[in-house]
Length: 135
Image (cartoon, rainbow, N blue to C red; front, side, top):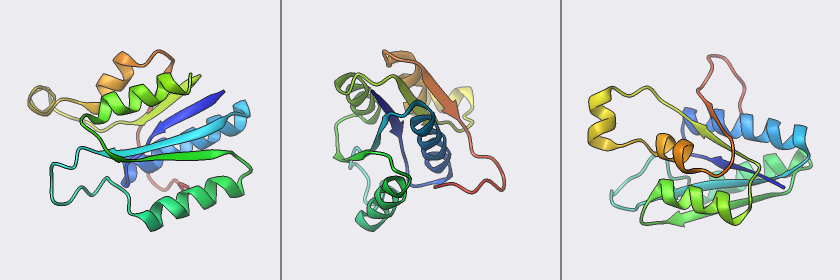
């Protein structure tokens, strides 16, 4: 049994990770953290550096959870997350969401929206809370 978190190295990803960890602890399930990029920009601030991956892995492991991080360059971020959900037969997926205007969604799409619609399991959509201490 697995909880999959779509994690980005920003406040939205931190919120998703915190909620994913809490759910994995509560359910006594393993955790898979997905941090991928399309690699089509010189800098993707949401793609975590190796030291950040190590920090997250150590913090989650210290809580007594089994954790695996899927980290790499993919053709499509949403598809990669949904594939991980399917491959692990996840019981829950967690995504961080941000407000976007209708035009923004139309022009840029929404990774979270596609995960919510395409995942074969329940999806918990979360947003950052002010003053919350995240993993």
